[in-house]
Image (cartoon, rainbow, N blue to C red; front, side):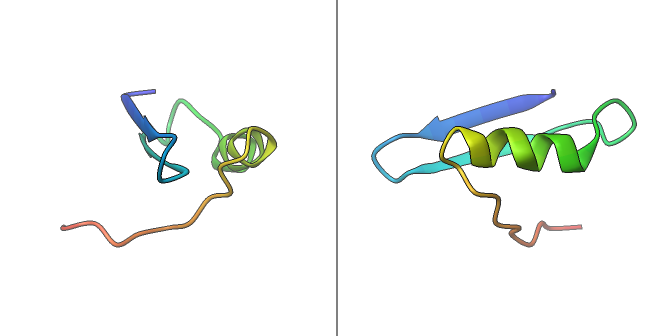
Length: 45
């Protein structure tokens, strides 16, 4: 994991991770399990 920030009041978390080191499906599942269903947001290229 490179960076994680969470806002409990807004019920949101932002995760930046190394796609080569972490499986996206497992990350999405883990986030959903703790109450943060994943929503993709566009990033500046």
